[in-house]
Amino acid sequence: MERTARIERETKETKINITLCLDGTGKSEIKSGISFFDHVLECFAKHSFIDMNFYIEGDLKVDGHHTVEDAGIVLGQAIAKALGDKKGIKRFGQYMLPMDETLALCALDLSGRPYLVFDADFQTECVGLFETQLVREFFYSVSYAAGMNLHIKILSGDNDHHMIEAIFKAFAKALSEAVSFDPRIDGVLSTKGSL
Image (cartoon, one colour):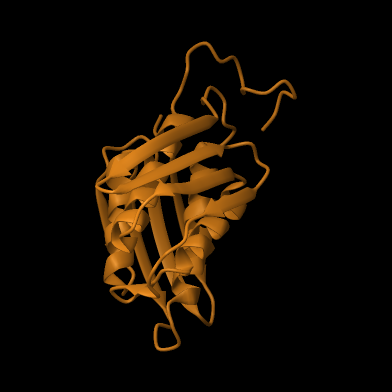
């Protein structure tokens, strides 16, 4: 049985619709109005093997903050909904991903307890029309909406495009590991008996 979710969220600032399948092949259709954001979300879908249609309309006349932040909330909610009771999943995922001069680390725990540690220093204010300070805002929203302990660290890097793309790809690979099944797991992987 495929693990899927559909979430719709509408506020005075954004209107967002996502359909997501954790057990996909990485197919996606992304429209946010911010081309670089679309690009890294497509990278996330491709490298996590999550099928995703993600349509985001935000108040870009103000700036990109509400669009990116609310997209993170909705993606986190969709991941949590698709996971359901989390029975049989590995729960933890980690990945170290190289991209040219950049090396990005991502480790996460689908514990139900949200927390973000984010360590990345960008050199510029924007990549294209995407504000680099919104990378942290996006992952903060994802981690709290999904109930995910999420650690992201740039170990080396000079080019902001490379660093941001490497972060999204490392997150994709770590999440792919965490949501995968292990036949040895009976119920959920916790001594508490619940996640």
